[in-house]
Length: 257
Ligand code: ADE
Image (cartoon, rainbow, N blue to C red):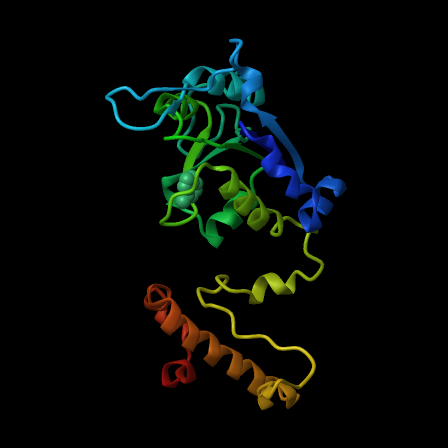
């Protein structure tokens, strides 16, 4: 997967050299490039922002550097205007997907991470201040798929940290990145449930014992216990997720629990 990130703070992305994301980059599974938005400015002050039309506090990012950055990273000849509803170019080739982190975006979820992991080219535009001039997104939407995405109901200084989060969630879903693909199947959010608690050795620690069932070797009982814990956790911590469970996915013993 190719990923381009544009930001006025490229240094934010140095952690992407580390750990499993760093290894995915080294392996070529993830071809990531980080670009400084200011390299597409043309004035001595390398200006990227200005005061908002209509007044109000803060500054808005000017459209010109963003327009030039997107033209350079997703050239218009490869992304002709006139998208089909499925986001494909007239010739059927896949267009880059532009993601713009914003507290006003649609919620980032594990389902969206899976969807993004199947793309061939992601472009991230990191806004700062009060955001990016809306015309940048409107113009980009004529030749690529644009999604404003929010990490949650709180406000960050800019999109950089959100991109780190999204990229980590997406990279671990890329083929070959996780050693044990089975762990993808059991983790929280994969089946609309939070994961049951996990334990390792020693069996007793500071007066707290590992639940007996996990040491029993009885795989049927262990699976049942994990399922009950997952249901109970989801019901208390995430009533919204619990209410959204498909009743057909619950067995008789789930309903009794
Ligand atoms: N930028 C500022 N706040 C944000 C949020 N909550 N999610 C994504 N991007 C943001």
